[in-house]
Image 1 (tube, rainbow, N blue to C red):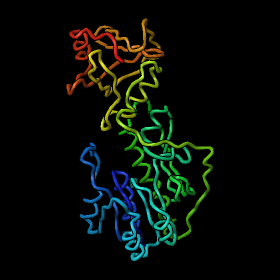
Image 2: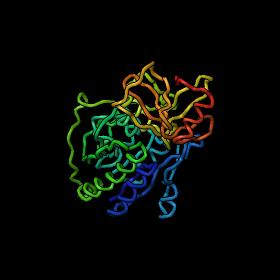
Image 3: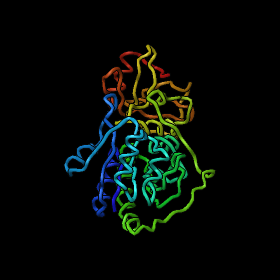
Image 4: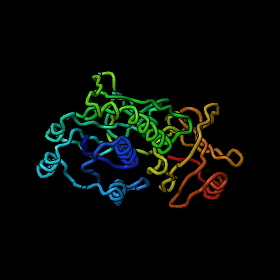
Length: 307
């Protein structure tokens, strides 16, 4: 079965590897140029394609008439999108005779849209998953082909959860691709009213509101920790402190106001809107501090509050 694949990131490589494993004829791959301003901690789809002699293209506008004509000339049976970052127009979606399928990193219809891995952690979800669905003009709104659930552990970060989702995608595609090759693709409609939609996230969205409960702050920290830009607060002189790792102390209450700091022995605790949070790994003006080093820094500079 001939396919065109749109792919990026480790999830893109997982999807391409599954197509190859199940004998799909990948006529061409579309991917993105890496953003020099982004922390590119993931694998290269371009390298994957080059190693296998598969034509690979990058373009700022795949919906341009030139690319629409090129895709039509390949006459694909089906099109797959694995974490491709651009919306695909109707003219392309109409080309493959069996339709166009997208792999999304949530259990649709929940968390349609951008950054689902980060958002499920920010919102404190206990499970998520991956969904293969038909593409329509509205984002992540087409009929569902199949899903696989993933449990979110308390210590999961966006990176560890993303790795779990890649593994789940492998399993889901191994189940579905043999069925898809028969041309009899299962599908069930989404009820979008029962779901949710979230937009993209920016580094400034990592600003910590210390009046929030400790658990909510912890969820933000683990949602945007390395390799993402990190959750942050400000010292009294305006310097940014990035909180890379912390733990909520939900049985611990502190006197004072949200953001106040307590040096409990060698531990640094910050009062929140409910309970406290213990700082484990931070970065201040490019200097990384861990454990007792954080307390020594704050004591030396008489830092008593974060904002």
